[in-house]
Every structure is written in structure tokens, then in C-alpha cells.
Image (tube, rainbow, N blue to C red):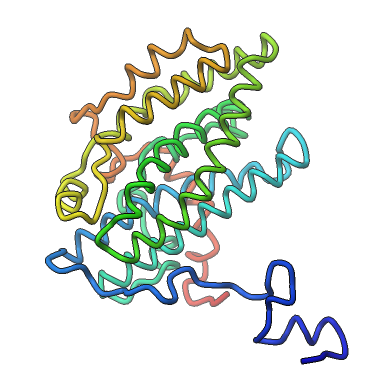
Length: 303
């Protein structure tokens, strides 16, 4: 098929392989069986998808705050791409949550028309680690390292989920998360083993995220129930793997003095239930006020 100009080719619905990266959006779940696994409570599956989706959505928003503020142009683009990867994961998971709820809620409804107590993300992703006053670039990379390491370990197991949709989302996500983890690890090593100032700031970043590590490994009853059904992953089972990877990175970064505190903090504390139960910091309320402003100002608007 021939075209008179490049714009006709871009508008063509077929043969987009003629372009290096294609011309259209390929839905990763187009050919995936969307039926509920036998015996699975749709309300529980929806809540689990909200947990994973909210984690990605909120951290994507936090990372987007770095747009035009990165230490260099290449890093500015890298952070934006990581944010877009997480936003893509959030869209798939929130869509699945709305689908199994059966109440007609879309990904946009769930993202823009819930209040802070209705969100189920872990607190780690909502706190300010920069570019606001709560942190800086080093703290942002430390948080990304911890989050990506933890989420990658979860998604690697989730590829075997009895829910075909979760398995497909995880299979796509592991490739992205492996890059996120390695990118953050490279920066933590570079900063930790750099100047005295960069090492100090990386240590401050570790101190910033340390109080929220234990929550990552606290099992919510929904996670426990779905894990026993082969649908979800029990976060408590991820602790040893995550702690070992963090130990290796901190050693390479010449930050061994921080390892005992980080590993000790990564212990599940059932009394410290937080985001999975809808208990959040004021930082989430502030973040949502900005993220949801336009949608709430004109709820009937279409994009």
C-alpha cells in the first residue's frame, strides 16, 4: 500500500509495522481472558487491584513532579518515562478493579473521584521525597530503588496468578520494573560512593524512607485470602529477597553503615497498618488536591 505523504501513513489503521515503533496503542490485555477465576470474590479482587493500581498511580504523580527539575536533561526524560510506565500499570489495574466491581466505575472515576481514605496505596509512595521540601534527587532515587525492588519481586510471582489479567499486567510490568530498579540502583551507587555531600544526602534519603519500609511487608486480609487462592502475592513472603537486594546495593554504594537500620526497618509490624487500610499522611490529601483539581472542577468534562 502506498501513500502520497507521511501524514496519510500515520493515519492508516493498518501496517503500522512500517514505522520503527508503530503508530498506534496496543492494549496489552486485548486477547486476555477477563473472566473471574472460579471461587474468587470480585470485591476482594477489585480491592487488590486498587492496592497495586494506587501504588503505581501515586508514585507516578510524585515522579511527574520532577518534570523539568531533574539534575540533567537525560535524567529528566528518564524519570518522566518511569512515571509513564507506572501510570500505564495503574490504568490497567484500575480498569480491572472497576470491571470486576461491576458498578460502572472507570479508571478515571477511580483516579479522580475518590478521597484520600478510599485510596489503598502504601504510604511510601505518597510522602514527599523531592523535589519538594521533603527531600531531593537522592531521596527520590532511594525511594524508587526500594519501591521498584519490592514491586518487581511481587510482579515476578504475580505472573503465575490464577487471574489471567493480573498475570498479563505482571508479565508486562516486570520488564519495566527491572529497568526502574536498575536505574535507581545505579544512581544510589553513584551518589553513595561519590562525594561526601552526595553520600550524606543519600543517607538522608534512606532515613526519609526507613519509617515506611515495614508497611511494605504487612499482609492485608485481602492479600492473604487471594494469595491462598493463587491469585495474589502475600507481601510478607517478599521480605528476604528485597532485604538482600537492598543490602547488595548499599554495599556497592559504600553505605554499609545504613544496612542494619534499613534491614531492621523492613520487618512487618501488624500494629502499624497504614495505606492498605486507608490510613494516609496529609501528603496524600495535598497530592490529590492537585491531581484531581481539573476533574472535580468539571466532572462532566471529557478529554
